[in-house]
Image 1 (cartoon, helix red, strand yellow):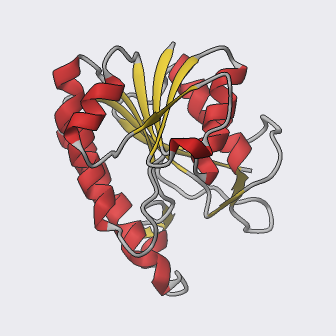
Image 2: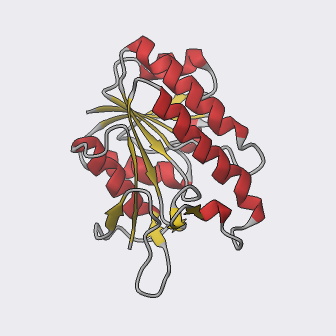
Amino acid sequence: MKITLFGASGMIGSRILAELVARGHAVTAVARHPENITRADAKAEAGDLLNAHDVARVATGADAVVSAYAPGFDAPARLLDAARTLTGILPTVNVSRLLWVSGAGSLEVAPGVQLADAPDFPAAWKPTALAHRDALQILAASKLQWTALSPAALISPGHRTGKFRLGLDQLITDEKGQSSISAEDYAVAVVDELETPRHIRQRFTLGY
């Protein structure tokens, strides 16, 4: 497939890029600083996900778009701007498939209680968690064939095992109550979903 990947130089985006090219997909890797993308097996492009012209330019001809955009804790509203830009522009360039890298904060930890609303959820993370939650509503209101993948509570660089559990709206924890996933295995789940869609117009999650 031809994939346009936004946020390709980030912690999660770079792992998705590696997984995509390892499986033989043709990737346009988009970043604000494309010089940080040094792989010879992907096409690096400069682009701003909040710029409609840039999105149209790099997404045209793609079979699917992946957004691994991460604006940082200081600018959570940009996530909503990114979601609005993608849902507005992709249909105009005949791209219907979008995979959105979401957050864990909107996953349920008890009936009717989301992780972001739990008493011990870090205050510094909450604005971004709430922005990811609101972004899901923007995706749901669009006509795109979207999928959002929420990670476990902790996602960090690690190892590619290919062994994890999938779920929908509930946070996945292990027998010790811990919720984690490596960025490498998160990337495996992203590409699995692109290759064999099982969660069209849905959010799903994963964890060990």
